[in-house]
Length: 343
Image 1 (cartoon, rainbow, N blue to C red):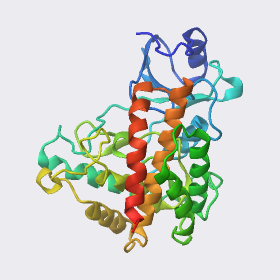
Image 2: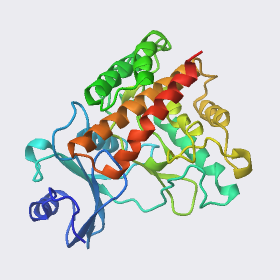
Image 3: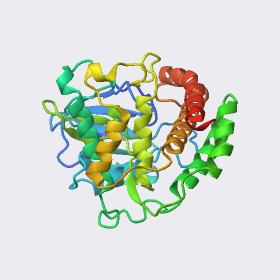
Image 4: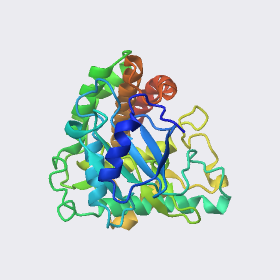
């Protein structure tokens, strides 16, 4: 095995691992995970046990993007919480990194990753429990007290949707490769129609979806929640609406959605059932302004993917093939977001 990233110099990396990762010894090889788009991630094989390295991508980066240091901090804070995360082992920040860019090392968690939300590899009766586990984990995450977890300064509380809309509109304009009328419309429409701030503040994941979780090998249990790059203090309904896009995205267009499927026949819950399960676990009633929250989520995801496409164009994407697919998804996402509220 050899590194697929020429910027990953093992001659300087291995001594660093031996000095900073507790008990690390007997390096045997390294392999890049082929999936994922934002931060290149590698499995390191060693006699002392495998671990995972996650780094910023090389090259020029958009402001506030690829903050692996924040990922490390939040997962370290959640180590003993009700939310399962990998154990953090070491962090190298930009200034002292042997690779010239920040990275962290965490334990390797064995288990299952499901890429298709229809869960074709499972029996019908085993599918709904996976969604139950996701709802349980999301509710547990939003029940965490940021102050008690040492994360009181992890974000600015209040006006989350307004601040996020402004942020991603700016990121979209900075990264835009091709203009899109629906994105422009959403960027102008959303600020005047977002729900008023109701004071709820929680630790939000920011990219809460099925394939960012490792499930236990033999049980419908989340063994590790991954990819915390977009985590912050914010409104809990943002995570919920983001995941619920999955019920609306098409299944047959490479977007890993549940749209167009006979969900009852497959043993999969409906969006309303999932939202109700989450609300029950958190002890809250219904959610006002749900279509607007969904529109916000589609807009935000399209803006994120626009940044991925731009990095691919600039030669910095971790997975260029996926970036090219995302370019075709952006107008679909923008249209679906507008359809949630238009007319």
